[in-house]
Length: 239
Image (cartoon, rainbow, N blue to C red; front, top):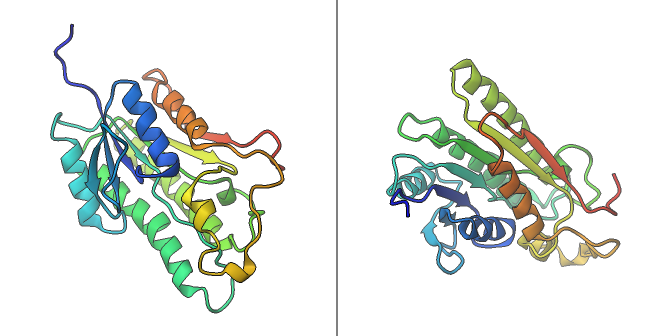
């Protein structure tokens, strides 16, 4: 029996939805998983740490906590994200800011930590959205889509800079379509109930466990293989 320590994974936004499913899936694969979230909560048997990705110090502390068992974190998944009904109209400035702060500033804070000389990881997986690659069919989702498009652009530029520096950290963008049983769906219209309408009633959406399986597949790719982008959508979702 090997006495070598378990490989370590860090999941941002792992207290609910897709992030929680990823943390559970990878823990079942034998990884030592650390979940970083604003709630400071994690599935049973998984180490939690309180972290707001909008705060650079919190992100740095999460990396430090995850690397205590080993000199490095083997892989990092960023599933932290928020989305709300926030059309291009006056009165939704607070929602715009929350979307941009978490989905863009939060990603930049993680990227800064990833590229710090004190941190080293073999694989970074980012949970994006199909809304970032074409106009979203969800009403009032324009700013969220723009934020996810910005995230994809940041990752492409990050990969370019890493390769120029001789750094071959893998970067995978997982781009899901409609996913049910997430806080995005539950909270989307909370602040604007007068505009509320069903989001997932026209076809069967993905579930978080299915996205988690895609992430597991990407992380298990051979060492010389980078799955740079994976688009996963429900079979019946329109293009």
